[in-house]
Image (tube, rainbow, N blue to C red):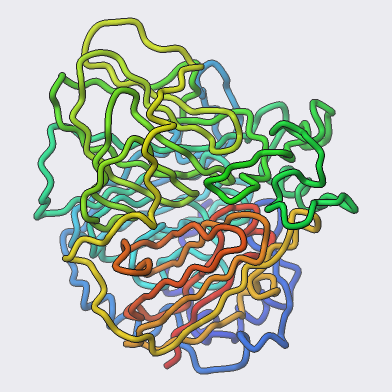
Length: 536
């Protein structure tokens, strides 16, 4: 019999930041095997010094939620369950939201109240994080920080006002569950939509390993966590050659079987766009809307139609370079916020990033290709507006090598540009760790739920990322957007290249305890996460 976990059970345990529940989580061994983040003690970290912080269900959070208003309620029921999914010629056992991959889209209008009840039919605890939304803190879905884990057989009702239109998505924040089939798009429509278009497609990109030849994300994490021992990884090479070995972007262990399937550690995957090492994991498939290139989804339109495409990178370890063969794309939004329109042939999306584009489609059949950056494999969908033979899975449109747009080349639309203001507080985050030891961290400290980097409501806060590693990291902040430098776009996820510094600014306007982490799911679960905490 399932038990219904209500918001009220947060009680005083989570409410007292650093007390009861959080103290137990920080000192305990933590949940494993997909059930949640394992705890890491770091009581001597200045970021964890005692302080009086706003609690996830405190009055400050309730007041911020009240300011968002309470519109029509959109009720949704969602079940997380074990599933057999057909990826297009390959059936896999995985965990998913029902029988769909991606999970069934949730669509609301800005101003609505979303009430979604998650029933957990999995063999492990789970959660739901609403990626990109500025929502009330106790609905953010981080176990042991903003809510108790949703245990097997239990359920939890997420209810919050949806304040801002845009392209978002949701996924667990429990272990490496996101690298299974547990993700779905969340589209928030603008009641005053300024764009004109004839059709709309949501395109979700994903790298897939779960259920293939016995592999699971937990087995992948276990393999990666062993590191690469005493191998010489090179000096100053940006991780490009891993000690001079030319593995040609393939799995280190070939097809040697193991309890978790063949080795999935990727060697030699390099990309100039990503500053060197492109990723850790050798995924056997790259999917577009849950389909392999051998059996792609086909989008249909009429020649001359103006189509809005909402791209979401739901991958665990892969950046995608995306292009629509024979077409240019006009970028209108990134991470849900409008930008000054920019035309491009191709886009680069790190994990967690979203881009909206508008395309005027031509007559024929065209490939929508997602190149796994640095990994020499692709995902594929098709656009058909007329007759003709469809391109095969090996197609590589020339637009992939044409004009490429990255977030740093965009400017925020004037309606969402942050007002010019000197920061009241600067927080420095050194991104640390290596593939050798797989000891990814923030400021040299692995994540613990008790960590706090303090901010106060009303401050302009500068986050200064310094990537001291040889890999790129897509850094994601919960509950807020930040502005890239020099009038750049508003985003919640931004790529920080190896050896580089990125300063972003935000207005502290959403009280609570908010995760800040790398959206490479394996880097995050290994420790590259921390918390911004609002002080009372």
